[in-house]
Amino acid sequence: MTIVDTPERRQLRELTRAFVTKEVLPYLDDWERAGEVPRSLHETAAKIGLLGIGFPESVGGSGGDLLDSILVTEEVIRSGGSSGLIAALFTHGIALPHMVASRDDGLIDRYVRPTLAGTMIGALAITEPDGGSDVAGIRTCARRDGDHYVVNGSKTYITSGVRSDFVTTAVCTDFPGSGSLSLLVIEKGTPGFTVGRRLEKLGWHCSDTAELSFVDVRVPVANRIGPEDTGFLAIMQQFATERLSLATQAYATAQRCVELATRWCRDRSTFGRPLASRQLVRHRLAEMHTRAEAARAYVHDVAERVAAGEPVVTEVAMAKNVAVAASDFVVDAALQLHGGFGYLRDAEVERHYRDARILGIGGGTTEIMNEIIAKGMGL
Ligand SMILES: Cc1cc2nc3c(=O)[nH]c(=O)nc-3n(C[C@H](O)[C@H](O)[C@H](O)COP(=O)(O)OP(=O)(O)OC[C@H]3O[C@@H](n4cnc5c(N)ncnc54)[C@H](O)[C@@H]3O)c2cc1C
Image 1: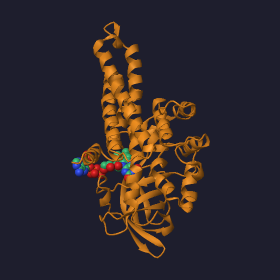
Image 2: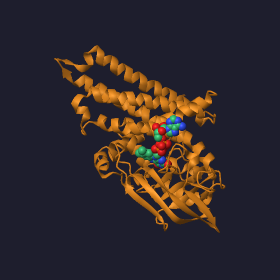
Image 3: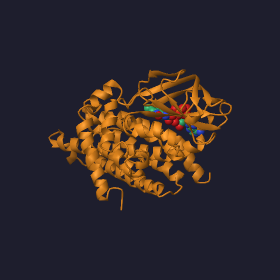
Image 4: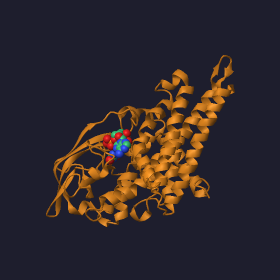
């Protein structure tokens, strides 16, 4: 069976499509202008069981696995949503998994359950102003002081950082840049923790992005996820799902843009004939479709292997790069086929063009993926 084939998954697709049509599409332009999605959207998505997909019922989730999460991401975008919406509404997909894996009931009760119920928002903070690719080089430090840590440092480009109630934060528990990392859950409102300005971006306009600052922030030791110095491993283990989500956003954006461009080329006539009747245009659409479908098939294949527990770090990196390359090609071609209209805010393809650009940067850049692939080749 492939991801799309079970009756349950067809139902999940329908549920997602109905949610996007009713709860997202009428408001998405407003959220893009506001720079964030409302909290009520999290609650609505939670009530129908969408927010908890991919998380076990034992921690407040709706059940399902990685493949179900991928299906939801794919369907949100194919129904007219966007990767920016995925980033904003499903930030918990990167903020919670370390806590769930740690099986720490205290953290699960305080943060995981309310977030999956849509009443709390979480974020994940790894990247720092000095660099994001070099995770081991993190300089935000946590010094132990009795049953607290005292945290000093800063983070940047943090998705949902403006709205979040807590931040799963990567800190160094030895000297800065030592690579000895731990993850601490730091609550909004803790003295010394400030959220800086809302960062303005090329795309992902409905997803708020923040700078965070920590000055002598006292965080209870109970808020550490797992044992000290296991943060680097925990981050690397969860990168697989984040990268596959980004890969899914990339191929689904490509698929959506193929649909939009195909419709446009059927309807739009130039020199007395529909664009779709021109061989050059037909071949361009065929190439776009081929690249989107090949990326989808490969990402699904790798996702199934990850879900089955196979150690496929190299393949995950390849899947992300393949899907991002498909998306980069398709969004550009789709916009071009729309002519001047493609450049206007009124065109859906314009948003995908802007939103897609981050997919080869977030969750590990294309170049860092190539490093992983080269290592996998024994280079
Ligand atoms: C909209 C948005 C949302 C984000 N959300 C989050 C979030 O929620 N949480 C979070 O922690 N981070 C987040 N990030 C940060 C993102 O993960 C980083 O931007 C990314 O990992 C790259 O890090 P950097 O920007 O510091 O680039 P750098 O690491 O400074 O890299 C700069 C350039 O150099 C290249 N490069 C770096 N090292 C090498 C090398 N060894 N060989 C060849 N080339 C190299 C990179 O590929 C890149 O092209 C977000 C970023 C954006 C823009």
